[in-house]
Image (cartoon, rainbow, N blue to C red; front, side, top):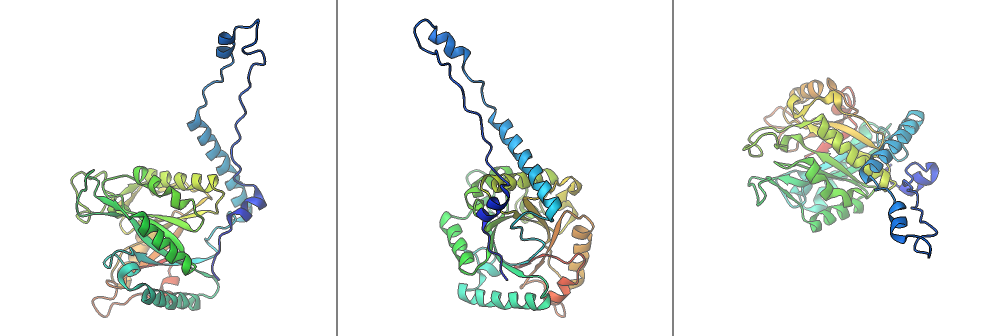
Length: 341
């Protein structure tokens, strides 16, 4: 039922992401010998400088074209989670009781609850396997600016290692989520690269807490925003990691519950190495949540869709309730990423 990534098998089968080979520099066989000017020969035969940025761009384009070709033929790349699975995730931070169900309850109690939720989803739609996931907010917007004035803080390596161990212990994939505050994705994502090189670790980005274009605004004062160029940067960042490390495609979740949270959505560029989930992240009664899904996810499609359910907020006040798996599955398009906070 659960997906198990084996990236070496994908590469062995297809040779998809071979490393870019650079030609060796040739030397002058007479260099330094009697009868020749060693200094002049050395200068004359000195190799031209290598434009590494251009070479990386060429390699990215080559890998993208190969990936596109395979995806057109087979539907998706080997090891792709979507659309063959429905991801069901518990969200939060294992060091915080206030950010979500992940971290709110003791570990064993939480996983017993999670197991029950997974069974509900599998029973509601037996046609598609459920892939369990943990979604840990790893770079978190803060109420204070910090020494560098960026209003965000990254989990310690010990915390990240612990949530990785939780996920693997329970056969979950893991999402590392980024709330950039007054920093940028360009500055923050490289901090996570060593973790994203692992096949079972994926990424989430949260425009709500992206405030670099809003000087002086604190997190939670206003809803932030990201542009298509920021999403495209993230896609290219992940695609490079996939190619360089011979990995199956990454899943990228993008939180959204207002129109302004994502600008120029039509300019978002797809890459088979990255599966984009536009994730409806708003809370409220079922009617409001469905309307938001239709207005901001369905009406502005990108690739796959997600839907969040809130244990603390969706059911209040009565008679409101947390939507059931069957109610969520009935949405069009049916979400393939489900998150509980």
